[in-house]
Length: 141
Image (cartoon, rainbow, N blue to C red; front, side):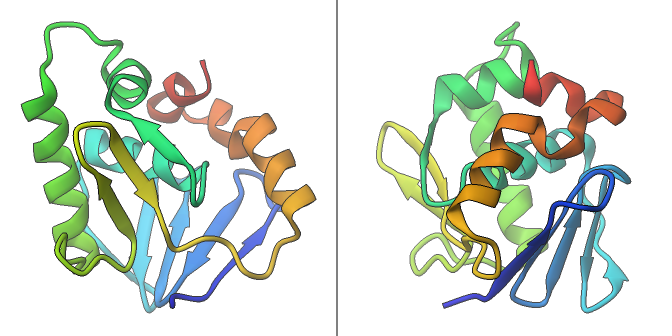
């Protein structure tokens, strides 16, 4: 199981899971301190999933949050999920980070370990600092 930690005191909280760090405020994903290239939409999908660890995020929720559900289909979401999985080195058949819930949506399964459930809930309510970055502000809307 991947270990995770969240530091909610930093502006734009940082989520650490396994060897990755997701920094929402700086729109950055790093593996062992090295930047991982991820396009804005797949990055926004990863952030939307990471904000709700171990919770199902439906396809419609993701489409609304990231694309405003305008002129896109499930195939666009599937492509974005594939890009996220490629960046994380995650296997859809044996997922460590993103689990597919057939015909319904996706679940971020590398849940924060170092944070209490109260802190994790507060991060979710506060949008984990996304308001400071335009690409992420749509996720909290």
